[in-house]
Length: 78
Image (cartoon, rainbow, N blue to C red; front, side):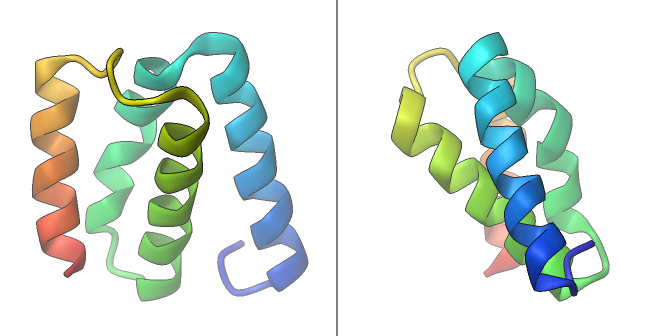
């Protein structure tokens, strides 16, 4: 999915819309583990999705465990 540009955009946009319905922590908690995926395009797609979700909804609803996993994943991506 991450290599096909059209599917990439649709997946990111769909995930952002789902986050608008269920909340930040519901989505972040499910996709944060994918930041450690072996595929660089996949990690980039997850990071872009997280960035858009947090930009839309803010980060105040993220629980401590998800926050810790998010920071760990971001450090892995860098």
